[in-house]
Image 1 (cartoon, one colour):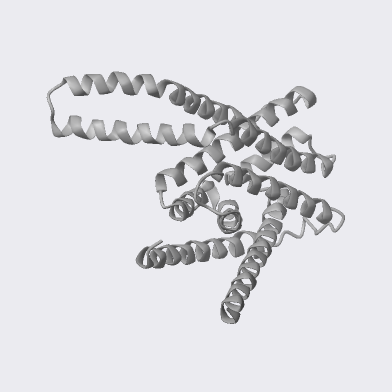
Image 2 (image 1 turned 90 degrees about the vertical axis):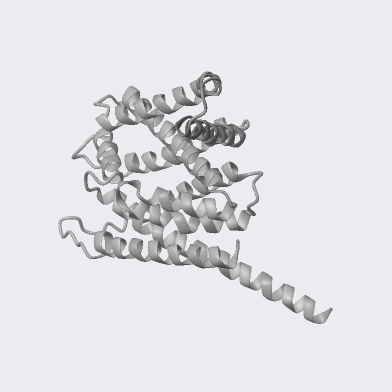
Length: 292
């Protein structure tokens, strides 16, 4: 990354991380609900859940990036930096930061966008699968949000399958017609969309089922934790629905707040460990150079 771009990248990182820290303090640190006292019995379960979930999700990101120009340490640092922003900011605004950072690290915002969108797609598909399985085995009502997510998945999957044929038809029509600025713009757009489709196909490359299974494992641990800590005042289906609505900023969930707080602590600690390991490795290399 060039010096000028590196400076802009660092500035945007500082700005977004500062906003996220302010939001975290306002939404998770300052509010104190006396009706929800701290429960030390639950803390080990939540901590274990956070560790397992983020180990799986970090592995999923590494698998999605496998074969691209990013080392394992850089991938883990990226995950530890962007995930706190993603879980803190409401309405999934943090995903734009994830796309930006991933694209900057790879040197291609197209590739970065495709990686993160695929990560979200398989995560959403696994979530819908878990909701359906939960409904089949425990009954209750499927949250309306699940239908919205299912419609989104169906639309994306249809567009992915249909696009090559659509592109061929549109290209033939545009190339056979008289050249105009509008038609040239359409051809450029089709070319861009074709590259996006090609990047998606390249990233999948036999990894799709593994990404899906890792997403299932992560949601299985998270929902399993909710079921384990379930109280008597509501069913597991209602608890999961409230948890999901809280994740998109519609409702409030004590369980989600605990998950977010421990996530922030864990990932900041992990990021510090990775940076420390890099500094130690760099100092050893310098020491070897000095001896030589």
